[in-house]
Length: 353
Ligand code: NAD
Image 1 (cartoon, rainbow, N blue to C red):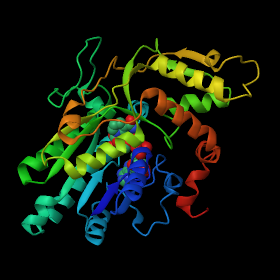
Image 2 (image 1 turned 45 degrees about the vertical axis):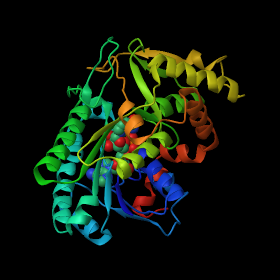
Image 3 (image 1 turned 180 degrees about the vertical axis):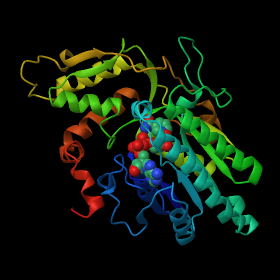
Image 4 (image 1 turned 135 degrees about the horizontal axis):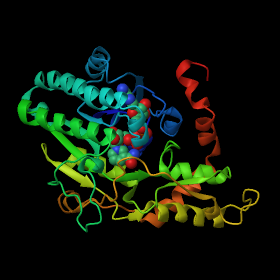
């Protein structure tokens, strides 16, 4: 198959591309604008593969999109390109509306024309897969309920609202224009190559630098966590075995409070790192409670039984095994994260590397 991945230089997109090159014979075309969140170093393991190509392009630019789709002639598109950080969406929502809503609309329009020009058998086999989040469902509060594929949308943050809008557009293009779409909604991911603004790498890297470990509010917000390579395998399964028009929830069966996540990282670092920052006996001593995020949802939890029963996918990692792999990866890959922290990773895109 010829697979076009948007956002393939990001955290999850790069894991998907590594997965596809390592586990399949597919050709992969990575379309990414290389915003602050895009990092080609995350693809160094596959960059020399003859089955991998990269193009820097923006999903908000209709002409660029048409040119890329026409040139690559994909059999499927997995759409991950997005603005993805909730705090940034609160500080400046405009980019989220532009990329997540307008960009997805552009892509759907290009793909609609592309698929309508195909012979019917090829069009029926084509897939447009929108990779989305469980945040579209909003807050579960303290109830014991989990999100299913039937849960009504109630997004709380500008990020979640923009992803909800994109999900609705994708389903409407499926229903109205017969585009063979699939949507997946996944819980919080963690693992190698995640940009350090997100909770787990932020805590690991602050701890290693002896900086405070900020925890929002009382830290009792609950999230489900999925190791990114498990998500990559699930996405490929949805793309290749999912029914057109269907939605699949993806989760890790790993509900944790934010405070427990931070303490678990500290406990791992306490055993793995000999040289603690000056004046610190345990990394946990660096935990600092800060003002809560506005509109912060209390609990998300995913019911992932549909993908398990219908597509035979379930995660391989427990939270303990995935977190240990993640912490060890950051310890072993200091050049990757130092380049991100000092901005050098962005030199490549301006031809200075
Ligand atoms: P990320 O921020 O790490 O990566 C996003 C990528 O998209 C970057 O490489 C960036 O350069 C690219 N991009 C941004 N704007 C673009 C544009 N206009 N044109 C082309 N490329 C552009 O995000 P991530 O964490 O890898 O998430 C990927 C997708 O998965 C997103 O759609 C996100 O909503 C969804 N998702 C993420 C999580 C999570 O926990 N990270 C969970 C569920 C769903």
